[in-house]
Image (cartoon, one colour):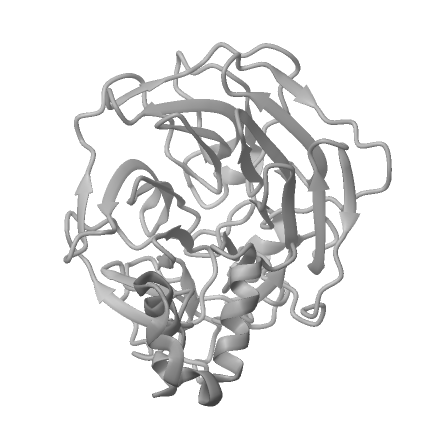
Length: 414
């Protein structure tokens, strides 16, 4: 698997030794932790989605009291949703209600038509295969458990990927319990997962499709050579194609790139002709245009935390390194969201080796990457804000929509 730092670390001998030596004291119960009311707490293994110019962040885990005798991690409060306004640059926290999911890490979050869909994850009592929906545009955030789903559900797992296409959520791969009869695809058992009398788990390359119109699970019959089982990979959807890069399988973190046609379900391995990114897991892979996907960070087979960025060009089938100003801020198990002006917002994640004897350096920083030229409208907004004192007196002549955006941009300066 890609490791479950909270609460089970059970896949590699050295990690089991760390537990036996008492270096880590992983809590087995959900714990509520106090966080700042001005911005979210540092975290890794969370989810983040965008809607209506905002980023919605939920879940994950953080360090406990730094004064503790042993390194302890706690899940973040399950009823807190943190919202970042990409226009104003401000955070706010909103408490959710209803059928609230358990506190988890490694879940998969997707947004369709203003609704957040949450699947899977790792909680104090193991993996989950439950699905929750959270309408984001309502005045109150109320979770609903989708308990009437038809068809064969995926096994309980975490650290999987998702493609969103035509009102369907197509989940790929992950690390979880032994596959049940009837599941299409390959499951590879992790022999180390039995340590400590735990239930057996492993990697898979299954595809499970949740149709949001019929509320039914299905598994497509795929063609072509499928990727190997894996977890902690990253998926991206471009038009009718789903891409998957990297991830962990057994003791290797991969750098292969696959594509699947979401209409015909045919797999293709993309043989990139020139040097590309190192093999990695716990990275992000974000579509930024109809022709480019942005890759950032991750964790190598040698347990190095990465800060490199790449752009994959779909049309040319080539990788290009991207220069940026965050080379001293490595990240793994972070989230990345595309903003309305073409910027990528990377939030949270861990800045060091998550599996070492040192305390994990979880982050609550927001890193912004410019991956394409700013639009003319954005440049005009930036100039208007920069020269606000000279121009504000004539802002009222602007169309209402533009005036509202300017007011939002400068709300924190008043």
